[in-house]
Image (cartoon, rainbow, N blue to C red; front, side, top):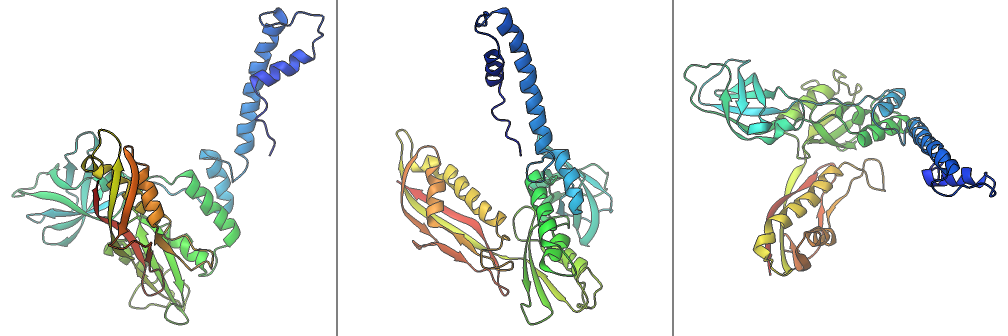
Length: 370
């Protein structure tokens, strides 16, 4: 790529002035300097636009619609936003299609009853696509009149809603499609199929986990928590539906018996002694510290499906004490951290990632004192 970073107003103006004879007045404010200044501004804008066009022509640097246009060449398209599916709990049966509204002010959204699970329990699909449907939990108000209904609540996330795919995720999928060549049930093919299903955020693939022809797929929801039973069932039915597993009735090739599961959660309890700044107490900083550690554990879950250096289907997850300490030290008001313990121990926490067991960290109790 051509480097246009030196094509600034000052550099362009100076280059033009250098071409003018020193016998003429070209000081700041002179007619020559004023006239060339306007040209330099126009040229700087031209080079900025030229750099934008150049970046839009390469998969590694394109953004927005330019990236969409390039990704099509790899047969990859940006994932659209998908709606959340939540569990609705009622004190009576309701008709399918009944509509309800949350009561959280400006972020209020509507849900529609789409499928009956049991008496008073329904799958509720958010009418607004995106992660906004994951946020609210609690009472909901009926939009549809339902005689005899007294209580209505939105509770568990069955399938997490997801926002429109970001540029970096789309870019990586396009690059992977060009370099890994998904085909006929290889690892890249399973990733292509499963990650395209609404609600799936992460995937670990374990070939031959119980002998030849067996494949395990462990999935995370798009909320970066272990997939719900409903999402696991949906993926299983898409890839290799029971009871005729291995018969090729799903996207998996004939002979491949696929088991879809979700990872286990490992509660991570943190305790530490804080040295705090003037006018602060450990109690005041407890919640910001909890949020900082929670953000670190989220980053681990978001990279849970990235293979380690030893192979395409080998994974490794650690909760590092040093990084927990670093996240706490980043909290304003925290001066130092000592005596950090993770689940009662002073060592890093190693999570199991193999064909038999997959684990992800979830924050438990955080105890801080001065």
